Length: 277
Image (cartoon, rainbow, N blue to C red):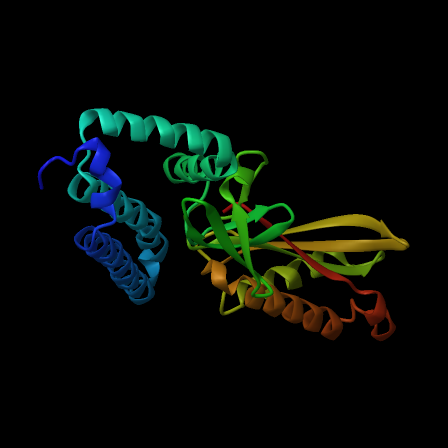
């Protein structure tokens, strides 16, 4: 395409042929992104052990394809002269700097996240006050799904202003911490043994990493013995199911052993926490 004179740039840009080219380029870019994303997500579902590795490519695909589309629009459709290009770049920088500071911050935040790698798609992270699995890293925002299945969108600029806790850092296995409370005067050896068995016999446990049981006295209106069970789940998406299973197994075992009196049930509290794998 011949170089467009500066005076006729916008007339050429709004011509029927240019509009058709713009729609074609943008539509093709969108379709390519959707297709490649579908392929990657399908492969991730099929090869579960490589799911997190494959999902890393989803945000990179979006950036790469939209980058190519932008270059094609500028060079192939607008094709401005050098002076016009300089003027457009200057005007764009001024406009973005004046009116789109937050937008630019979010884009920069997205690029920093992608290249610095504090987390990736599939990681379980805590971004105060939200905790959940990262499902998408975009140029403007990051999306995560909480344990109660709520989709939360966080602007990328916010990630640069606060600490982000990553629970698994790219690994499929994930440490889940479950607390069970018993009466203060408890047979500690038996409690520790039963708690270990509760986690080790769960169908969701990842036994290549250790199951650890800790005992401590805590004051919650009265003195309790806190039994803290630390164990790894096979897949981060099984966190809630694993925690529930371990809690039930531990309480049933404590009741059968007489460590958990019938009337103590209303006082027993079960909690959880998560830590990096």
